[in-house]
Length: 348
Ligand code: UDP
Ligand code: MG
Image (cartoon, rainbow, N blue to C red; front, side, top):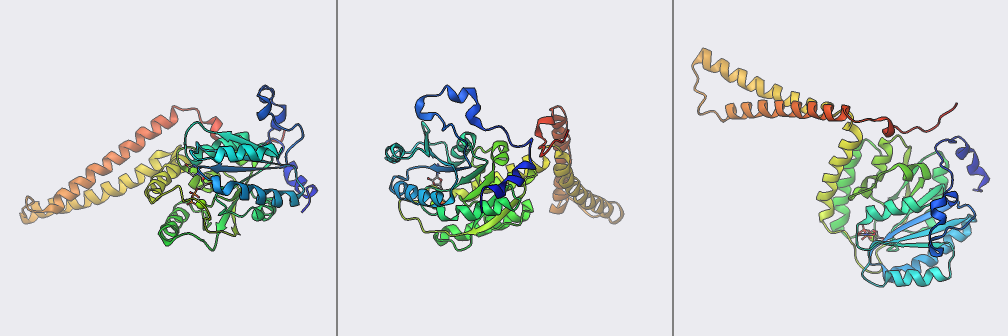
């Protein structure tokens, strides 16, 4: 597909596409190394990496081949997330012969989400591709992702249909994806694929922190962006080892709670807490009333009935939930919300 074909999609979004950053005066003040190319950029590739020295040359080579064929003005942003191996030196060497390449180096390891957040901030293109640095994602997939984006989506998430990872990772991951799919209501199979394509609006609006990179499609969906998936090739890890152990799963579920709460219920906490509070309090009341009935009319003894304790407990927890929901509503109401609404177009 040619560049001209992308134009109509962009034109429908006059307000949402910010002016390109090369004109930003603050950026011009930076040192010569960080200075941007004067001409526009059509595509930015953002690659977070942590101790991937062995993969980088091969990755760079594959990227150049894939991007060269696309006939677009591109940039490749490597975000070195505080590597302790020679990753940065390798990148510095590669950058000497590649004017498309930019390298950000963190002072310490902040995590993949932080690296992506900085990459999103620095990216200049109207289309942003993210991918892992370990050669598990194939740069040859980039054109297909871009085409899918042009069908009218804001985020296209890679779907590793055939995964080349150990079972200890793929089985929990299936379960994780099923739960996220169910709770978020987004019908995609693979939330945490490193290979994704975004429209610029999406990356400039998402707040990626902690370990929320696993939920970018969820965050985008709940902000009103159009999210879809596209099957991609996945390869076994060739060098180095995975940076995320099994702790990723319980952390992932806690993060899911955060995401659901901050996207769905931030502005209406009573709908979450109030609902469960009322359900719990109702069940507790039924139990307590029933036992009181037995006691009054049949003289039953309550001291040896654990159910009685259970009923009282449910009642108290229910009231607590409703109260928490009300307090949440009060906090939510005292905060100005106007900047939280996403405006796609503004026709005047
Ligand atoms: N990564 C990172 N910071 C970290 C951990 C990982 O930038 O603290 C990068 C890593 O170098 C790789 C990508 O995130 O490019 C995905 O990591 P990994 O391949 O270890 O994850 P997996 O494929 O096992 O899910
Ligand atoms: Mg990997």
